[in-house]
Length: 582
Image (tube, rainbow, N blue to C red; front, side):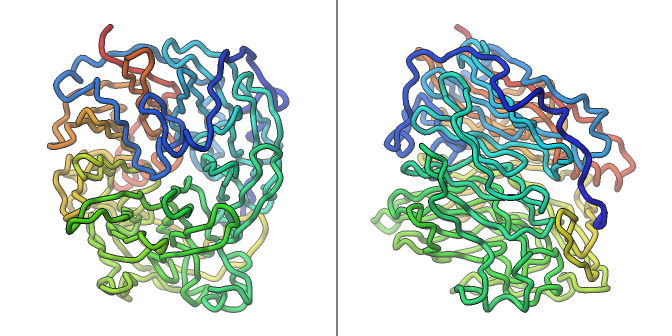
């Protein structure tokens, strides 16, 4: 696989040139200002995790633990047209819906895995307009998905699988501008939702498995012109370059494929950085900054203001691209500015961010992990067990596998309870055996194969939803599933937690205090997209998209191979909206 170029056409996924395929118009559109993004109305969901801090929490409380059992479907709609699944035989994975629908005063915006953007009437489901971006002949993405759009002013912004940034008119779906950010033939692509801060549209790139050099780039929202570009792998002479040997930095990976969070109090945008390339760290000696790190960037200039590295010389493919969630808590009689992160490596981290620096406070395993012998209590730097650290020519086992204790699906945080909620996978381990590999543009640059095997306890469960008290760093409850769990989390002020993620295609509401399942509904496909909540005309709604695939499907295939099973999770591909009767 490492010598085969990714040259199967995905162009049939789109129809015609980049265009508005269905053209209506939004009347009386409410422009999304910088102030509204910093303090969104409770009725709206204006960015991927609703607020800059990444809490994925709705302050709406009409739907409660007492009445959620009455939740019923209001509407659902297919986001097609889509390529027939059988025509994806040559793809590394089937496409998946991984985007939250954004809602601005009754207008819903949704992106699809094949780089369409659709505007709906949020209360009725009526389609207003649909935009299609044409992908180039010869492109086949490793991760055929899109994780959402961004709203600012009267525009909708989205990033494409061939590394373009596009701005659309929010009223009509007409393309206003587009710009190429990188060359897809060199392995660059984009799957994340942009982050807009004060008129600057920030995005990062994918492609770590293809030996790219990762970066975050900011563009002017009005013109699309580049404002700044910050590489996640420093070149010689820059801070951190001493952590690379020779020319290994040129194709060192460090991709950025999950939307960052923004600390408005300290004016810092936090971005997570993925694995190094090749996978096995002995092929690139050194700490390899800023792979597997959180970077704190100045949104005005792109300057790196702070960083924290979770794994030095990262060698388990534990991308740490999910940024920390930002919270304010009362401790010792004073309000403290903190952050927390459930790392893919299986540890929960707690940070102080009050002085504009991400300072380590505490780390604690939330799933079984056998690589770290411990964390330095002052710095959080891990000490590794050599028995579980892959090297050249030796097959090495480690837990959890490369998919980690959590993957990309986002957690939520209820500020009233002080609880964080996270979908996890445990009882799985991986193995690697390193080998020399040469870089070739557009070709997998791994230096190892990848295995995943369910471990002891997997027959009891693999997936789970956990609730943690961040102040005390203690787990409050856990609900287990025999299935893996790939469900992003929504919490609400009504005392509820909503999530999908299991291969039975169930969408569930949990009691936030106890974890009891209070309501569930089987949908037309597995759910790996973030749920959202919004209000229209005094009525609270819950919305989520179905669409199983990409790494949820890959992970499931590994479990099937180990157990000799043949799980067939329905693929779905629809947007569902629920509310209480009336």
